[in-house]
Image (cartoon, rainbow, N blue to C red; front, side, top):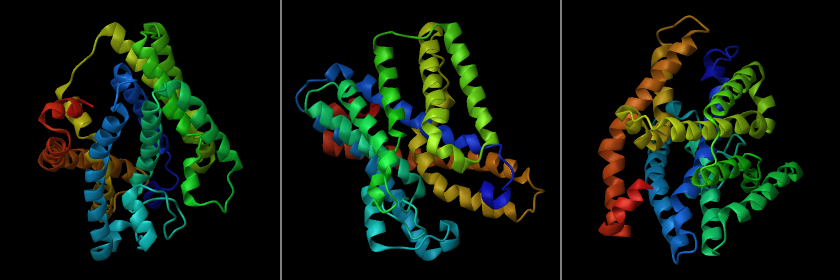
Length: 328
């Protein structure tokens, strides 16, 4: 949207680092929620089943809506062209080249879920082998990151998973271990880590996005991991502040993430017709897009996502395991 409306306006370039924070949080949560079950029989299968129930049904539903939109209203789908293998791969979260030569699925934001499935499969494999995910996956993903520099242009789209960004998941796992072992930053150290990290992140706004991407693990991943560790440390020392609205947004975050593929283009098209003065028109569009996407996401979470997940968990896990699955 920025390139389309205000190409010289760089206020929100750093917003792309949300993915880096997400990957670190993912590693953190996987360690914290499973640590006391490592070595238990069937833990790998249970873990993978719960993750698939959480990820795939809603993703398939929203991807199907995107597929229909491509057929009916292509202007709202950013003019993506349909290809058989690309469509199949999109549903399976397998990276595949789209018509524009990019390794993005039909639902573009799904590229991050391809990495998530890689994390889930690797984590489940470590659990199945009754090995410590920390000790096994750290060198495993280090190799993945190293292969990024050997990757050639002729390699298939699946090899885009060889990316240093996987190390952000590893950072999150080790932060999870620190939390379990009560190895926290001091309040002063946590505050300093947040300040320095935010300064580094803000400084990247002066750099072109394409220049940042090859080094994102360093300039975005490390600061985001530090912010996560600092937040966990401050929570441990100062106590948890519970905000009902924030909790609701957290519960609906997956729906919000997926549904933005529809809300953002619609808001953009509607507000463009108002002919707002550039470049601050992008600020207005960004703020309105965030509000609209959050509201739509929360509503759909309540009336679609939550009932669907509850039903699937009852069907696949049984009533006695549904509550535990919902918490994870």
